[in-house]
Every structure is written in structure tokens, then in C-alpha cells.
Length: 277
Image (cartoon, rainbow, N blue to C red; front, side, top):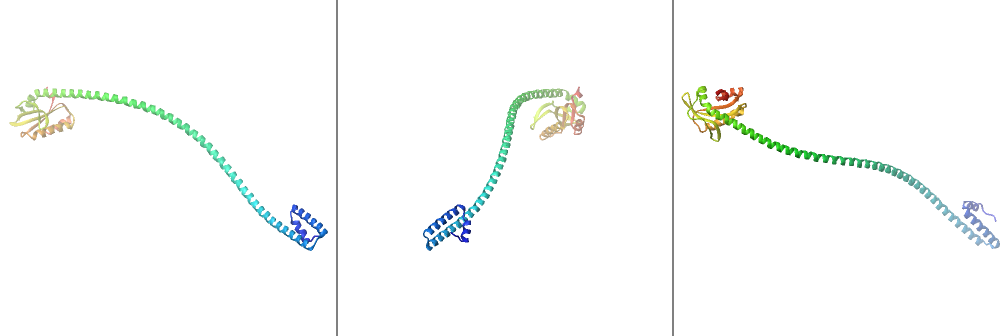
């Protein structure tokens, strides 16, 4: 049967599978029409074809939509693959860093081990030093006791020598002072305490017809100014209770020339033991 140009164009737009169905349908219709076709039947057939064409149009639209969606999905898949690649690269770098950190941790662990060994060695050394220090402390304490004992012995010896000098002076001074300094002792020389101060030599005497009081101190060596100050302190103590003029006296084995001159300038009678020999 003849078909219109418009129908043929439409048929060209139909997918092959559907087109085959349509051709079969048209052939069936033609056969039926040939058998008994009416205008009404033909109109119904046209309506069916129109519906099929509309359905085809909607199908094509959906196919287009699906094509767009597929393109979008393909693009998304591409981005996903890129992201996965980036993540894989990042993971690789992370693993490399972890490997590096593992090596570093191993190095640190080894360094820590060496440090602990050094600390243990230092601890042993510190204990040895502490023991040496304790031993040194004990030795120092022993030496200190020995030093104190030596000082005590030296002090005792010094006091013994000082007393020996004083005892000799008690015997020799009266005549020496009389001949060398015109001091005639009227009461014997004594050791006494006056106003809280120990006085090594105390005696009343006369000089040029005047009553005086001799206040003396004995020192092994007159070699520093503190010994002059010591005598001055004793003079001040006696002067507070004694009205008579005071004659300061220093008895020593040896007097430094400068201090000897200073003492004599201050009016102090300085007697060195070799002078009365």
C-alpha cells in the first residue's frame, strides 16, 4: 500500500527495533484493511501511530536526558578517578613519610638507649664521686681534728712561751726599768684583772719624784698594729679607775722597726728580751 512522505520521514526517525514492529503492524493493518477496512478503522490506526510517535518523542527526550546524565556521570567518574589518583599519591607520600619516621624513631630509640647507658655510667661515676667525697669529708674531718689538736698544742706552746717571757720579765724588769727608764718600782710587778681586762704587768712606781702606775702587755712579736691597739684598750680600762699617771709598757722578744718607732712616739716603753740579757 502507498505511504505518505511524512509517514516515511517519521518512520526513518524510529529506532530499528520499533520500526520493524511498526512495519509489521502496518502490514497487518494493510492485510486487515484489504480484508475489511473502514474509514473509522483507518482513523483509529492513525491515532495509534500518532500515539506511538509521541511515545517515541518522549523516549528520545529521555534518551537525550540520559545521555546528558551519562556525560555528567562520566565527568564525575573522571574527577573521581583523578581524586583517587591524588589520594593514592598522597597515600604513597604518607607511607614514605611513615617509613622515614620509622627510621627516625629507630634512630631515636638507639640514641635513647645510648643516652641511658651514658646516664647509667654517669650514675656509677656519681656514686664513685659521692663515695670519694664522703671519704674526703672524713679525711677533712680527721685533718680538722688533727689541726685543732695542733692549734691547741701550738696555742698551749704559745701560752707557755708567753708565760715564760712574762716570768722572765718579772725578774728582769725592775732593775732594767730603773737603769734604762728611771722607773723605780715601789711594789712588785704582778699579773691582775682591772675593769674586765687582763693586765700582764701592773706595778706602782716613781719617776722623777712622781708616783706613776706601770701598765704592761707582753707579746711574742710586735709585728702588727693590733697589738698596740690591744695595749691601748687595757690602758683605757685602767685609766677609768686609776687617778695616777699611767706608763704604758710592751715586753716582746722582737719589735718590728716601724712599729717600734710608732710605739715610742706614742710614749710606750718597749723592752725587747735581748736588752736585759
